[in-house]
Image (cartoon, rainbow, N blue to C red; front, top):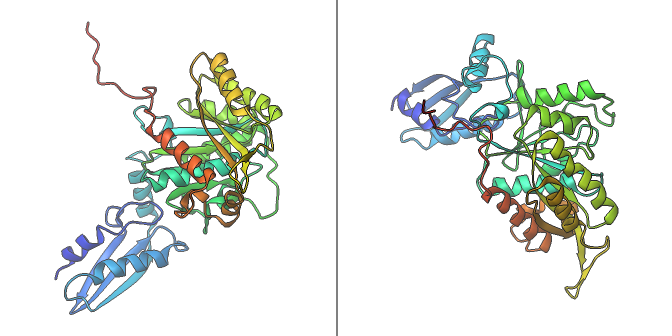
Length: 373
């Protein structure tokens, strides 16, 4: 057995935050073989890496499978400043300074901003469950909790550790196979975030540029309710972002949701659809009790279709479900409960599939077309 054989085995070990092989990230600094004992030296990005135990376990498991290995010893060290700089440049595709990857020409990540007219309609619950459902289908998904004042995504997705900082780069924690970042990961517990427009814009810009999102298929943004500073900043920083509007059947909520969606007309964004939450309560006999009335979601879809001059479909109706609320509190989204065949779980999974089946537009893409002169 040689170090090359061990290194080949380590090609299958992924850094749990960056989601790339540790060999590709130059984290394997040395391999020593002494008879049946193999020592692997791993350089962590930071000394306080919260997932060092996970890396140790995965390295041990990979090397232990090799013939003739009796014991695996994993030693940890920390990258030097120059090594961290090289890593950041590599992760940014050779660009030393941070940029917003999702606004670059040719980027194929689909960015969906989940909006609502007012609070309390379940926008964050919908976002968390859609993200988990998409990841369960094999997509690479990220969620940016842009609801600066009412952040709740970390709890709903069960985030267990804070982000890791590699100098000016932030590695987002991964929960339920979803990369997550939120101001809640940086705010003091119980303390409100009291920021005005320019600070909100800068925070969103940092979350988009300084966070290493990697190669995502979908990035979901959980927006604060209404049409305030964050919604405007999203339009400026992510001009290709699409809007998904969440409402309830209630007329008062629907009217406000229409304004949130109609903002797309001023920002030149596309509204991809409407989701109606809390549509009804399923009774023991299977009938539906419409606690908040009916028709709000379809009304918003119809009004936005008329206002925006293009089809805005009602993508689905999600009934009230105690399990949906419990999943948000426990950090295990309802859609991940394989035993659940409730109407709410089914509706959320279908909405997620519908969004991912829908083809992405050509905005922002480079086309292989040469002008004929």
